[in-house]
Image (cartoon, rainbow, N blue to C red):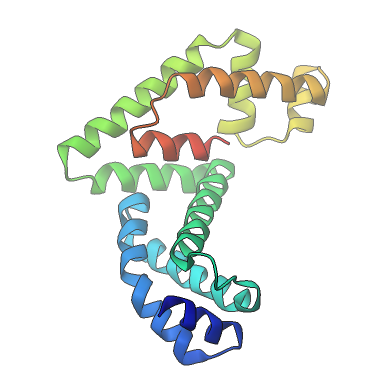
Length: 188
């Protein structure tokens, strides 16, 4: 049934689009609310996901899993939000505050604190120069060129420091915890 809906969607069939929307929107919205912790932002992202589906309808392969395709789009939209938040300090502070405030489950709160502790520990393991470069790039959102000028090194050296910093930080996290996985994707 899904394959047939995708074929119809390829040809611009709006009713097929609506059926796919009803089939996946609630599941995706729940996932978005869980990750983003704010329903309004999650609803906006959901609409953006389905706008992307409609815009790319002709290139969707009906022989591949539509479920995987749509969840990959959702994942990319979430990553985009976290990247934007990294560049926009005010948005980042808001997202962190909303996330912490809306976390009513003790386990979620503990996981967030643990991941933050692991991240801080990992950052503190970096050499002073690498730590400074990491903070300038990932926390303050500066470009490699800007950081190179600030620190007085080449852009290539900044890139080298970032690759090694990310390797160190990633090694401190476990793949089993979804909060940590999302945090690491945010740091890409």
